[in-house]
Image (tube, rainbow, N blue to C red; front, side, top):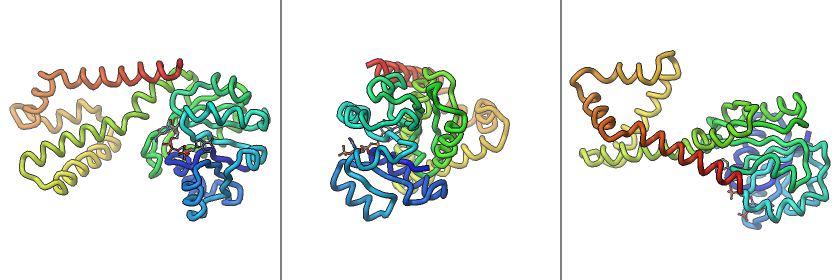
Length: 267
Ligand SMILES: NC(=O)c1ccc[n+]([C@@H]2O[C@H](COP(=O)([O-])OP(=O)(O)OC[C@H]3O[C@@H](n4cnc5c(N)ncnc54)[C@H](OP(=O)(O)O)[C@@H]3O)[C@@H](O)[C@H]2O)c1
């Protein structure tokens, strides 16, 4: 099998590195198509697959093509690709908000897998959801799932609408986590800790809490009650969060993210 990654930016590079690290593919069978001369030079220095600058030189050689460009770049990219594609080629899109039907219409491809990864994919701790057009065979789907699994965990979704929902949860999710961590770090510094101490206090608290929660069947609410004793410090914080409708504010934020994902997909 030969894989072509179109777009050697943050995500394209993440996939290239994860694929090679997992030994799913040999370097000679991985191609990257990039248009920026500076990035091409960087990629060549990294010795990461065969780097191409023109679609015509690589598109027909690939069995699986990963679309890792920004959605707006497809307006110029797709018309160039269209005359060269074969209906048997599988396209894996990681582009936010671009529907399977939009890819089918503007690219003329039939075997299309749409996925939504998130940033921790860069370190093999990503969360990716994916769905596919009916033309993709079970074997092709398993091959792509194995490939996506090299960047973390995956969930296959029958319903494409849930990709927008996952965009609001796991796609944007890392930003919510950093937002909360940042607020806790600022509070720690206000209480007298240095920036590096604040970072360690907060970072290790997040890491430890997530690992602990994953090792057990308890719900988040049950974990909260293990920390919060009656009349104690945690309860004081929880009371303040509840008075300020913090729980609802988070849910409203995620709903706004979902609405925006739907809106972008309908453009
Ligand atoms: N970053 C994330 O956390 C994340 C998460 C989920 C999904 N995504 C999706 O992943 C996709 C890529 O995001 P990214 O952050 O990796 O973007 P990026 O760093 O900008 O990478 C895209 C690369 O594609 C290149 N490119 C554009 N048009 C091209 C063409 N016609 N032929 C070859 N290369 C071309 C760009 O070159 P130029 O710089 O010269 O334009 C750039 O190097 C996006 O669609 C985004 O929605 C990203």
